[in-house]
Length: 326
Image 1 (spheres, rainbow, N blue to C red):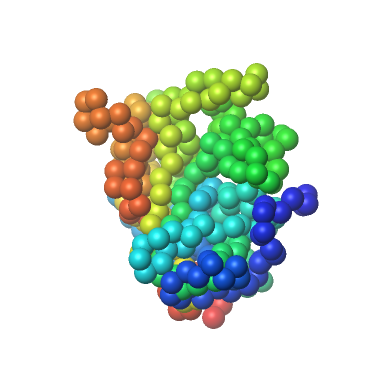
Image 2: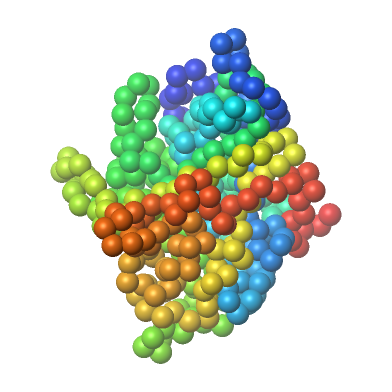
């Protein structure tokens, strides 16, 4: 683990529990710790680590989880008037600047479900916010182009994975195009190998999301611009971190996909415009794969900003982990 410099007035808040309650009182100058929990769901049950999966895809298949990681950023609390107050993230191996990496797999990489003794690698985002009363939460999925660190703009998405600070140094989240990042990596193993168009087989069916149509070489100092950003905001107008968590639903993500076959392009969906497996995945994410209409120029942008069908609010205190001992 490398030590990272703190941003502004951020103080250590890891492990603290924050109750989201009422209107912000930023003028007081006081802060309060924040902890936002995430959970991975499938078939109406919490899964993660090596827990068996059920009800996946249009065929309602069982399966196993190979990978489930995503970058999230731009966290803010929402008060009763709808005003946003940014959360300053704690700087650690999972969080840098305003970006965090969520990883639902366990460190052992085995076939056991998540338990208190075998937890997911990281499913909590921590930080601080001005003291006050809040009723909602907002964040975005993806790695931003840049963020502010110590008052300076720092490249985030298009940076060298070998020299970047954690958690941007994860080679498994590197995107091949212009040194970018995969924003979402979901890989599942169906009960039988995936059949490809040429008759060959693949062990996994994958969803890899990142910016596409990019130009410019960051290694030579060129500015990188991408035609399809493929980032999207999630707004939860009613959210209480003491009793609730953010849930990502694998069943919803894959409900329009037949994960037993691949119909062309990369196995599963890797955000290609011409990949026949991508339209239902992008619909579940809440993103336009291509332009919604001729000349709309909204490819890679949210279909309804703030709304993503795969994300919802769940009750944290009543959550049960599939396969775990109670």
